[in-house]
Amino acid sequence: MPDVSRVWQRPFFVRTVGSSYEWAMQRPRVAAGFGRVVMGADVGRIYRAMAVVAEMPDGTDILDVPCGGGAVISRIRPGQRVRYVGVDVSAAMLDRARARYGDVELVKASIDRMPFADNEFDLCLCFNGLHCVPDPGAAVAEMARCLRPGGRLLGEFAVRGQLARSDAYMSVLRAAGAFGPAGTIRDARRWFTEAGLALDALDCTGAIAHFDARLRE
Ligand SMILES: C[S@@+](CC[C@H](N)C(=O)[O-])C[C@H]1O[C@@H](n2cnc3c(N)ncnc32)[C@H](O)[C@@H]1O
View 1 (spheres, rainbow, N blue to C red):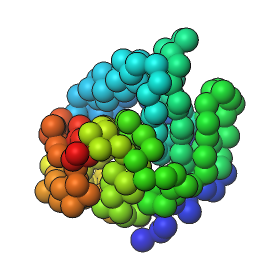
View 2 (spheres, helix red, strand yellow; view 1 turned 45 degrees about the vertical axis):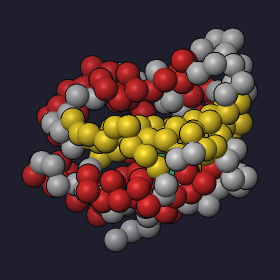
View 3 (cartoon, rainbow, N blue to C red; view 1 turned 45 degrees about the horizontal axis):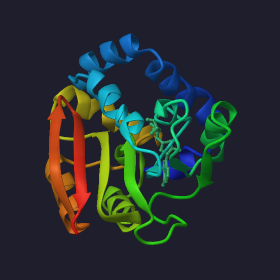
């Protein structure tokens, strides 16, 4: 299986696959049609969940990983005074984010080894990320380490074992190096629990799982 994190660092991959993904995400109707047909999912829920950024009060410390080209960064309200840090392993994806959102702190690092102190953030966002990393369990543990007690980890990812057609699609993307091993909803429950997170929500629309968890105090 190709190393997904290396693949996402290739400029040609980012110019083709990365930019096609962003193109679709910037067009909610395209993403909704694709999500329904391929993943059996209501993709609208992803956009609704991203809106949490704008609800955060001034002074909140927010970590967005993997931030990619900045789909979630775009949800910061004008005038909102938060510390917002975007992390991604791919310099090419970070360049795309920087071109649009130059005033946000952007850091090149792997999700399973981030250069932050323990308990540094109030909120960690992980959208469409856990299926794109080599070890989702290690990624969840590292995000939990960076959260303050009571801090929130929220996001969405593609899960295996929900629908035959989405499993087939994910196998193709895994072979191409765009996806990592991902996991089932049962695997996900284990990742969160082992990381010391209490789940307020973990449920699927089709093959897309939504999670909302808190680091135990
Ligand atoms: C599908 S994009 C999602 C980006 C963004 N959250 C969004 O919703 O548009 C997946 C991202 O995962 C990043 N990625 C892959 N492996 C990673 C790793 N080990 N650590 C951090 N980011 C990684 C890729 O570079 C890519 O930007």
